Image 1 (cartoon, rainbow, N blue to C red):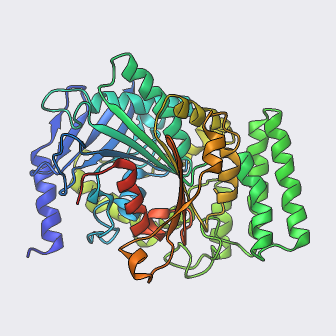
Image 2 (cartoon, helix red, strand yellow):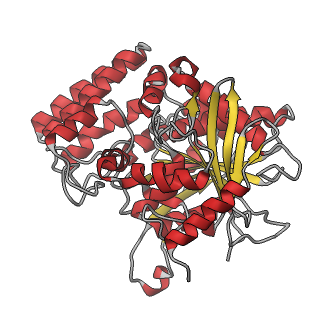
Image 3 (cartoon, one colour):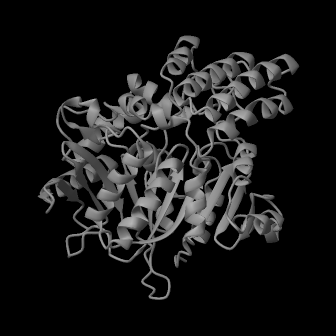
Length: 471
């Protein structure tokens, strides 16, 4: 067997040999065997979005159950799906470039996108921040423009027209997912997009900021991370956020949200917002190395909701980490990234550009998808705080969908993994409640990043969502 370094070098050479200019003027490339393609699409003048498609080696040609494609949308806003989702969560290789047994390629093809423009390897020319997306709606328009190009038809189109597309999102990516799904459906109806939207899955998604901040204090109190005084303090700030949102004071609400996060960090001795059983400063948290107090404060000042693991990976760039990988071996393999551009160079500007929409809810968009008959799956990690299960359940109850009453009354069924139901060895891994086109998964033992914390259950869930014909 060839050494990993040699294999990567050969892959880089193959990619460079296949470098082409796509019909839309965007650079595109891929591996010699066709298992991977990547490229840029100019979604607006001087705004370039990067995508990376993996074709599954487990593909099954089944006319009755077509092979699915999953579009993974990362959160932040400003976190790279091409980086984090790919190498940290569900792609074929981990950060050490070793095979991931739980890759979602076992069930579907995977399309990673650095979204919004300015995230990861995506960029706006000359760093002109006025060209960034300044609303969730603009992000949806950009993503739909990307999909129109990728489903463009002809032998050179990366995605097959009519093949089932599932949009799966994490964190703030859930807001992108629902707005993009509606924009895509409109484009499909107008004949511009030749795709079949088969479903949307919202993982620990920032759909209703109000419901999440109201859930934080009581949850932390019940978990012994706050006392009565701390609970009162946090609830006071949460109620202020609620009042600001009612008055449509979204900028003020974002500032109060930051105030609440800072208060919780101080009152809980720096709990990990993405796994309530851990401290963000502990060696067993999402970080590869302990946080120092100065680094923790630096992250708080960045006002970013990127999951803690993401932020720590960014900070680890000083020693290499994911940043080092993306800017060296991955950039060399891709061969089309601008030479003077580093991965994540415009990330912070992406978050700042979307601040006006950050605290706005997207419950109405979920309602619209359900009413249109789109299959919607919501999944939530038991140990997540930032998008806590209680907050998720609360915003679901605000849906005006006609099936909500029956959904609420439906029984839950336990989910097991790897035959544990028969063996009785691993215990309950999740619960599932379903009614018509709404499914809700409670994932046990998982925090914000479900595929990382409970990979077997996440993969089983994906197979159920996509009805993948994979064996």
